[in-house]
Image 1 (cartoon, helix red, strand yellow):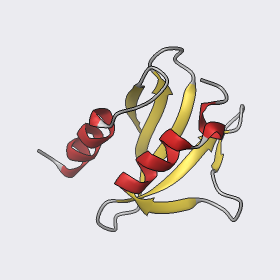
Image 2 (cartoon, rainbow, N blue to C red):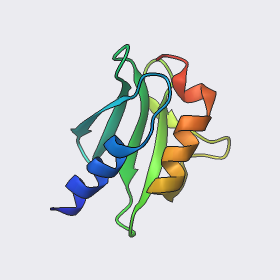
Image 3 (tube, rainbow, N blue to C red):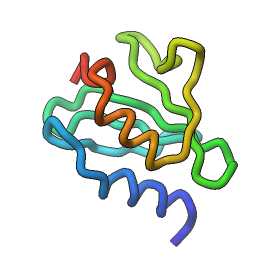
Image 4 (cartoon, helix red, strand yellow):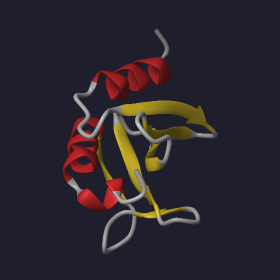
Amino acid sequence: MPAADVMRARIEAFQWPRGGIAVTCAGSGYSLRSARTGQPVARLKPTGEEDKVQVLWWNGERWGASGPFGIATMPLDKALDYIAAEPNFWIHA
C-alpha cells in the first residue's frame, strides 16, 4: 500500500467524535469533512518527514493556521487527537 493510502487509512480508522469524518485527497493533502453535515473540519498536509503533518482549520472562507503561533505541525496520531479534542475545528460541522 502506498504511503499516502496508509495515511488515509489511519485517518479514516480513527475514532472520530460528532458523527465521524469523510476524507478526500486533494492537492498535496487530505481534507476532512463532517460525515454528518459535509462541512469542513480540518486539512492535513504531509510534510515529507516520517508521518508529520501540518494541521489547518477552516476559517469560514479558506484553510488557515490552526494554532495561535502559525500552522501546527505534528505526528499524525497527535494531529488526529488534536482535531478530535479541539472544539474550534467543529464550529462549521
